[in-house]
Image (cartoon, rainbow, N blue to C red; front, side, top):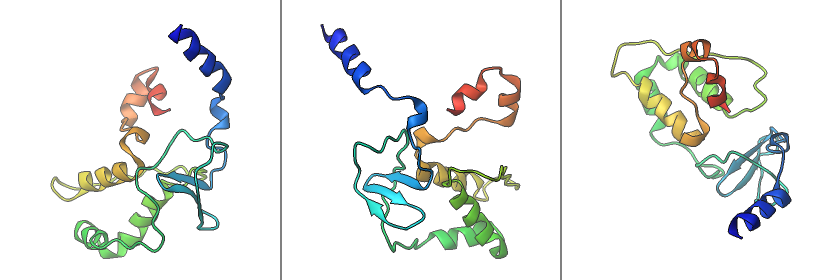
Length: 146
């Protein structure tokens, strides 16, 4: 009987994948839906279907205290803005520019810390760490990117 009830609920609430996250200018955060174009945040509602929620709440006017210092220690200060823009671009779902970012350097210089920070900002369940080699060599590897 439980399986029948669950199947009935699934049938009544089913949505196609294309119906989720249709507005690319909305970022789903724990405290609401953030509109990139207007800078406003609205409460969650049942009509906005989303498969992804960033784990960090949107706090208007919040400023990072140590992030700039960290970036200036791991890269050339003239490249800080470029790196911050690349990080911000990872939140823009339209993705009109296909960009691959490659960090080069010896060990213990902040590369892993930076990627772990970016993973934490997006949420571990929303990030794939699949290598280009794996994508090319394994026939069904792209499935893991969904």
